[in-house]
Amino acid sequence: MAKKTTKAAGTSKNTTGRGPARFRILALDGGGIRGVMTAYWLTQLEKRLGGATADHFDLIAGTSTGSILACALGMRIPAKDIVELYRMKGREIFPATAERLWDRFGRTFTQGISAPKYSDEGLEQSLRSCFGDAVLGDIGARPRVMVTTYNTITRQAMVMKSWREEYAQVPLWEAAKASSSAPTYFPAHVTNVMGATMPLVDGGVVANNPTACAIAEAVKLHGDALPLSRLVVGSFGTGESTRPISVRQSREWGAAEWAVPVISV
Image 1 (cartoon, one colour):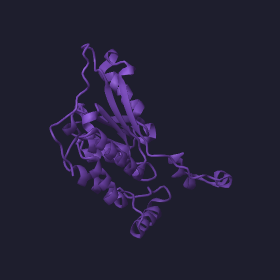
Image 2 (cartoon, helix red, strand yellow):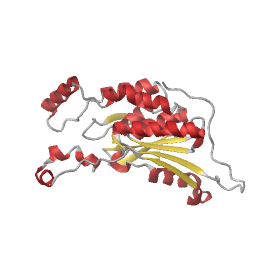
Image 3 (cartoon, one colour):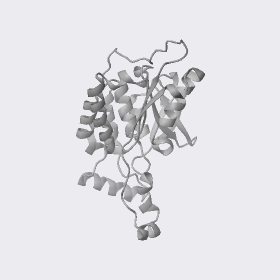
């Protein structure tokens, strides 16, 4: 599914010679399988604007399911193909079949109640199928792509950036998987970056909406040459959980019951 063309969008030109006239950011929130809604909205955006989404933005930032979208858009995969990825692979990434429920039971039996809700095999296979051997460096700097993750050893956010040398050889499937490994749902993704082994979990732990991270990066890239008035930001969410938690539940639930709902609170 991974593909790339040579056509690329640059930052809008500024006739004054100081910094870009506009710097266009696309921020894609986390939200699991609900990312299919974002993908659908992006198909409509591509229809209205014409061409690939990447041709209209200077920086694309994604968290969790948004990181999958960001990496795909950076490789100029059409949004309609991303919708199809969610439609065809959604059950593998977020399984709910009897077989997977037995798998969950087995892991709970061996690992205890702390076992992740899902195996990460389906997620990894789907991402490998989508991105193949492509690495972050294949995206480069036009548009720039950044994905958020969280390092559980340093207890700090780690933002992988397509234009930075230290992340250039990180496979796209690994960047997206690390950013999508939501605690309680999936085990941490262990990878090697610049010779260091690190366990990474969902970027939503620190920035489920990566807009602020993207704006900070834009300012860092251009400094005083880019006043905030020149920023154009498109932020796509995935909705929010509206399931009520009753008075009785809120008073009686323990760690096991709160573990998953707290992710969406």
